[in-house]
Amino acid sequence: MPVSVGEVVEGTVTGITNFGAFIQLPEGKSGLVHISEISHDYVEKVADYLKKNQKVKVKVLSISKDGKISLSIRQAKPKTKQPVELEWNNTEQVQRGLSFEDKLNQFMKDSSERMDQLKTRDSRRGNGMKSRKANYMDF
Image (cartoon, rainbow, N blue to C red; front, side, top):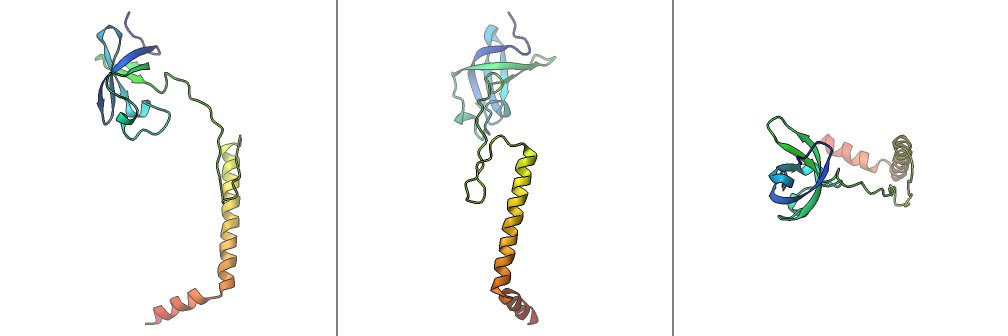
């Protein structure tokens, strides 16, 4: 039975390149898993994730007119949901379940407060830096 688009099948890694891995599929067919389709994480080196002769489950993404089969390992397995935890400003604020806009607003607020603190600190120091810079420019 030939493989079809959308199907999840088991295959064997037959070759590893810097751009992906070749997978031997049932019935003698082979396909390519592009480096971007290996894991949900960023993959810098394919060899860090796959080894030759390793058995893997792959999803068939496409089959071109000339018979090339495009595969995905990351789409063959569900993405594990982990809570989003971000730490900002060494206060270890945990941002959970916030929308992107909420996180962006919080970041902008924190950034603005930090800039105000830096400006206040610089103004307390006086114009020492400015006067040194002005003296340097006078030469």
